[in-house]
Amino acid sequence: MIHARALTRVFTIKKETVEAVRGIDLDVEAGQLVAFLGPNGAGKSTTLRMLTTLLPPTSGTALVAGHDVARNPAGVRARIGYVGQRNSAGENFLVRDELVTQGRCYGLHAKEAAARADELLELLDLKPLAKRAPGNLSGGQRRRLDIALGLVHRPDLLFLDEPSTGLDPKSRAEIWAHILRLRETYGTTLFLTTHYLEEADSMAERVVIIDNGEIIADGTSEQLKNDLAGDHIMITTGTEEQARGAAEIGDGTATGTTVRLRVSNAAAALPDYLRILDGAGIKVATAETARPTLDDVFLALTGRSLADDDIPA
Image (cartoon, rainbow, N blue to C red; front, side):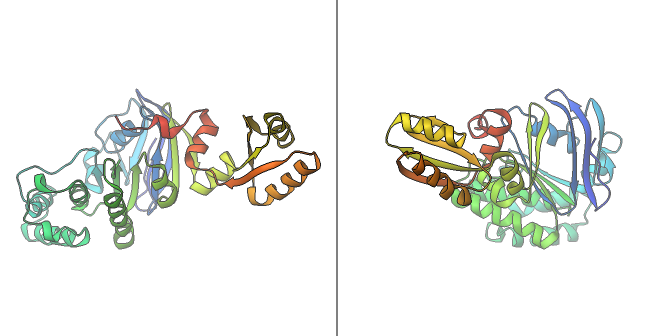
């Protein structure tokens, strides 16, 4: 079921089901920036399509921005914005005209639509491009226009499906700067999918991971990494025999002369581990620590890599 209580809770899902989505429970509070992660085919886009009324659920209930997606889809659409993976603007109309037309479609008067278009052009640094056709814009510029189109009617909640996919690093950084500015300017609740794990790790205040149509992890990035993946210690030894001994002592794994251990606090555990190895006569050639990634979280939960599975088609 997905429900949203006005501005306190923007949506909740309770056992929402349709084909690829087996049944998920999820609450999202107003003002949150939530990253929705999962491998290809996990149910990310299907869930977004249900939440945005593009696909009816086969069971369960969904309240989004205070309205039931099945009983009052028009009420949902009036309160949300949706930026899909494909570009929304036409190829031949001018950028500003696209925004004005979108505003008129949402019931704004001509002057209101024009004023809102100018406001969004300023907010998303599109003003110099106002008289250009979308077909002549770069990938990053078109993505900013897509976001502007999704914001014309001042939605409480904005869904972003892979907003930075296919962009170069500079354009990705610019898109994220604008996304974060939206929260600062409007307090918009943002719910997005991304296959760039570093984006979710550094930008989102909450990470939800879905696999095989079910949510398998939900929390802040740090919580998930600490609770489900842990820090890592990596050492190398002079011989494979010593590596096997070091792995047994630390309850880790040895591959050749390399030993890997999972610990709760690598910085604190490493000195003690090295002293124990020294006492056992095991010579350590190199030693280093590493913080886990969200891919480590997925690996710990499923035994496979999210980064490998989630390469866009």
